[in-house]
Image 1 (tube, rainbow, N blue to C red):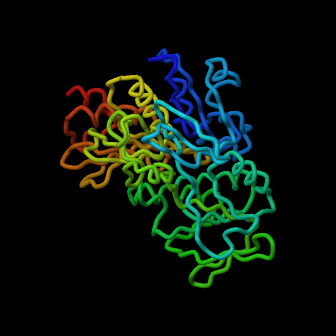
Image 2 (cartoon, rainbow, N blue to C red; image 1 turned 90 degrees about the horizontal axis):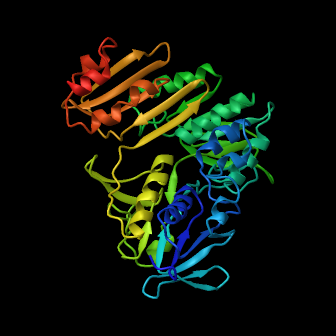
Image 3 (cartoon, helix red, strand yellow; image 1 turned 180 degrees about the vertical axis):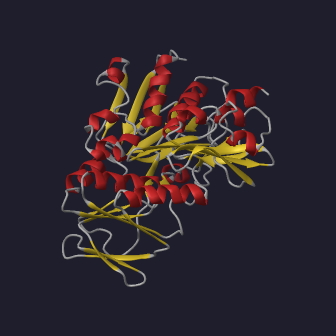
Length: 408
């Protein structure tokens, strides 16, 4: 770990921040530089659609560490600075202003960007995506009690925006192309529970609806669906997914496929370039396939593992994915990424809004989704990695402790 080496990190989000912090924590004495295109120190994004949008906290809550922490660790931060090109063979990168910077090892933690709708009127004032701190500030300022908020997409971000709008007493309308909310992540029964949660709180949800275009003079006034249905609205938030930022990597000749291809340590197809976070497509032996994760836990832990690998570490990154969302009085948590299952088991009281839904295939636990029941969900990760098989009737029996099933 030579003190005359330069390690550069592109991206000042969660993965970028944890890469830099870990390099120093592991004793690296060389130069560490973070380039971030946002004018904000390393931060996490989950609070943007939760506490910040709800008005319960200011944007500073997103900071990973108190101000000055990284500077005190002699980590250079070049914020509001965009990298335009990476030259792997030369071990240099070029900034947007034309300056060239040399590096010994490089981390690409560029994350992703909110996918936009390529439709007429998408550039009107009042049409937003929610990905950055500036996005959250702008949306929150428009969520007034007399506003009508249209949300396009009934995934996690879209539903959290709808919940925030209702808390501000705004009118909330959600349209979704699929036939149910969160269709890619949840069973039909769990989708219906969350759908009903929003309806009870005053949200108008329409599934199976295809969007066509926005209309307005200089700012958004209405949205038109493909069947001609017109929605008068003051703002629209497009929440239809995330596009990984792989353009720099692709142009540099690195292997990409739904993200930047990395190994179990975060190393790309170039030995001195690493990637971690929302833009990294990595092998997960626990799930038996490659995945690209868009989660807080992955951005942090994968970056920590990759930073250690940059210093010669041999640890592999392999974790069961975990996600969470807060909507109204419901804490929703998911463990695993089940693609298919042949049996489900519900533990707890679905009607009371405190239960876990387990997904099994041939007796093997593939994942679980919980509503207001983190206590039982926390055992799911251990059960999934135990190699054991389980009976659905046992999982559904509240008299049988999950610890006992795990040990049995």
